[in-house]
Image (cartoon, rainbow over all chains, first blue to last red):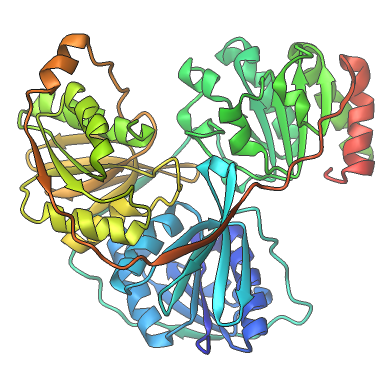
Length: 327
Length: 216
C-alpha cells in the first residue's frame, strides 16, 4: 500500500465532528505504519478557519471544498466532490467516520471505485499489504475480521471507539481550496430540523443516561434530564419506552435503535434485555439502577444499585452536584 | 424472516399504494428458501414479486447491489424502498449502492416519506435532528425504524398471497469486494457487581466512578 491515507473529515456547521478527529488520529497511525502521508477532505461551508485544526490530529494535507451550497450534506454533491478528490489523491486507504453522512457516502464511493466498504469498524490492522478491519455484526454479538479486496480499502469507523489524540507537535498542513462545479441533481436538501432540546446525538455522547419501562411514563424522564444536565450527558431510552410513545425513536438504544459506546452509560429502570444490551454493551463503564434485583442488567453492569429510580436518581443528581462543586 | 428494516420499507410502500394507487412489487435476491419471505411480503400487501434466485444467501454488499440493480433495470417504478440495513451483517450499504448504479437519487435513513405529484419529501434521520430532502421520482429511499408501523397478515391474506405472481430470474454474478477472514465472539465483559441498595449506595457510586473507574 503505497498511496496515502485519505480521511473524510466531516463537519457540523463551521466545526469538525469529534468522530472526524478520531478518524484522523487512526489514519495518522496507519499512515505512519505504511510510511505515507495523510490527506484530509473537508466538505462544507465556512470551514476555512477550522481547516488547519486537522493538522493537530495528523493531516499533512487538507483538501477543502467550501461553498454555501455545501452547508447541508447533499449526498450527490458530496459524492461527486469526494470521487474527484479520491481519484486525484489515489489513496490506498480511505477512512470515514460512521456517522449518518459517512455511512451514506462510503458505499456510494465504493460502487463507483469498484471496491468495498468495511462498515462501522472498531479496530484496524495492517497485515502485510492488507488492511484488516474488525467490525461487529449481528448487532455486536459477533466480531468479523474483514479484508477489503479492492485496491482502495474503504472503512467507516464507529464514533467514540477510536481515541482522538492531538499530536505533541501538530502538523502544519497545506490547505488547498478545491475548485469544483456542483453536479446536476434531482435532490434538494431543504433544511435541518434539530430535535428539540438535544445538543448532541447519542452516538457522539460521552455520557448517556437511559430510561426504560421502569420510568413509568414520559413525564418522569425529567429526573434523567436533570442528572444528564449535571453530568453533561444526553438522555437515551429503551425500546419499550420508545414503543410506548414516551420518547422519540432518535433516543432509542439497542438493536433497532442506536449502537452507542460512551464512557459512561447509566441505565435507569432498564431490565437489560438482549435487544438493549447489544446497543450499549461496549460502553466503557455501565451503571444500572433498577428495583428488580433479578434484572439481567445486573449481570453485566460494572456498578449496580438495587433501588427505586425515583429515589436513587435524584439522590445521585444531588451527590454529583456536590461532587462537581468541590472538584 | 423478513429483515425488520425491510418490513418498515414494505409497509411504507403498501401505504403509498393505498393512498396514491399503483402497485407494490417485491424484489428479493436469495436462494429457494427465500420464497417464504416473498410469500409473507405478498400477504402483507405487495401485489407481485421478482425472485432473483441465487445459490446461497448473498452477503457481499456490492455484489448484492449489482445483482439487484441489474434485476431492476427492466422494471418500471416511481419509488424504490429498502430497509436501511440488514440486521445480520449490519453493513448499511446496499440501498445507496443500487441507486448509484441506477443513477437515481437516494435518501437514506428515512423516518417520514410523503409522495405526491411525482415528487417526494423525505425526512432523513441524522445526528441531533433530521434533514428534509425533496426529490423528483423515480427515487430510492432506505427505511429507518418506524417509517411505517408494519401490519399483521390475516390468514385469508396468507392464502391469497399464494395466488399472486412470482417471476423467477437468474441474478447477475459479480466478484465479492469483502472477504471475511474470521468470526469471533467479542471479549466478554466482567460480570456485574451490585454495590448496594437504594439511596445509601449513591455516595459509594460517585466515589467508585471517580476513583476506580475514573470516568467522572
